[in-house]
Image: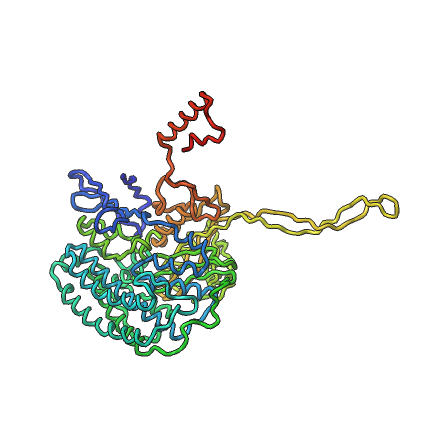
Amino acid sequence: MTFPAIDTEKREGWNRPPVILPDGEGDVLEVAMGPHHPSTHGVFRMDVALDGERVIRLKPVFGYLHRNHEKIAEQASYLGSMPYTDRLDYFCSLSNNWAYALAVEKLVGQEVPERAEYIRVILAEFTRIQNHASSIGFLIQEMGASGTPLMYAFKEREKILDLFESLTGSRMMSNYMRFGGCRVDVSAPWLDAARKVSAGLPQFVDEFEALLSSNEILMARCQGIGVLKPDLAVNAGVSGPMLRASGVNYDIRKIDHYGIYDRFKFRVPVGDHGDIYDRYMVRILEMRESIAILGQALNDIPAGPVMNAKAKIRGFRPKPGEAYGRIEAPKGELGFYLISDGGPNPYRYRVRPPSLINLTILEDMCLGQNVADVVLIFGSVDIVLGEVDR
Amino acid sequence: MKTVEEIKAAIEAAVPGAGVEVVPNPSPSAQHSLRLAPASAVAVATFLRDDAELAFDFLSNVSGVDWPDKEIVEKVKVTRQVAKVVDGVEQQVDETVDETRKRIEPGCVEAVYHLYSVAKKHGPLVIRMKTVNRTDQVDLPSLTPIWRAAEFQEREVFDLYGIVFTGHPDLRRILMWDGFKDHPMRKDYVEPDDFEYEPTPHDEVLARAQAHQAAAGTANPEGAGAGQ
């Protein structure tokens, strides 16, 4: 591993990472963190140049899990890619289903029945809660608190995954949504079980916060570390909790009003400092808002069909054209860009992966920090490599 | 948000000679796009970001699209003189014949950008640029200096589609490995039989065995002995 020579000319402009030169004492040490480093989940590498303990350059390297999902989707029918979207961000397969269904519905101009919209909101918010809980668990795990916080998160996550399993048949690979609705209806006992899980969630978040939020070690290691400025965050296309932790009030549920999100009362948590602690806090507060949405949705869900009667399953051929649909996935803005040439397969199928794009500013956040903090900053971005590499 | 026509007019007022054209989108999504001329793309993109009313400060998505050379088959009616025997006398007669003609419409690779505005909370605006051809003139101006969000996504388009973004600060392969030669998202990409093939001493041994068998006169015509 060798870094190319620094070309200061190319680094002009405020949106490039600053050039940090070594102080001249001792040698610069180049470290390959990963792909087998515990925090990188085995499929991600950071080439880091260190001056002492200080990071002076960092290049993320990925592609270890690349299977050209987009090319495979071009060779499958529109519906044939639906199960494959589960494998992008395998923590949030139901959000991925929704984003893809939304893009296709935009492409063909299809309506979704009201009950199906409610089911989608319920599932997406459950997904968000379990994703945020486990991503915080992983973050604390990388800080050195091995096990306990992650197990607290996973205990609650299992309850939610049990709900998913009884509805979709699978804990994680749901393959549940369809263009114009959902695959199967939810039953009354399922809704009761969902209400019960939802009613237990506030207690879980309280407990989680009592365990972590004012923990001295967590505060010492997270506050003021990995700061991301709001103007850079917007320019770099950062989205989701990362963007909001930097103080930018931008939640696609509030902006696009996709689905039926304009019917629910919820607030958008926004951070002040843009450091790791704010990202942690924004996720905690977002879980609380998701619980509020869940309560309203589970209360108001109307009876009715879950599938648009005009929706075509066989012989699905959208008219030529293109569409870009996006949702507020737990990790950020998840979008699908589809071009149809009138055939049964998409001519172009593009995933806009929030995990990949949120890594753009990883170097900016890590420069000048200690090497031990790199792992934490990386953990606070909340990525899933299945989505980064596709 | 302004319509694409109004945005086009605003661009042409601000950047003279911008060469922007509207690409209509017939699908129900009605996300029409603007095609920028590569020569003025950076100026137009800067205007789109910095204009107080448009304020497209958030570049959401960059995708490559491959449009291969298209063979267009047309039926044309052609009139020509044909020698024919009419009433026992050979004459030159006009005759109309259907003829199929093929012509090749040159392809291109396209980069599509989806813009939103965080400040004004509107979008999307779709802008696109296309290369001259698919082989040797595949460079487009990079928009990374304007939106940092394009950094990894343009690298991905370079990697998978082979568009060379001039002005990109760090244009390297991102998903495929560095030694990889082709661009796998292109429509005419053929994947190799064996990704991990590399010559090994085993091949030399086989070649020596084949040469030996040929000299000894024992080689069978199908080479089955050498292939095992």
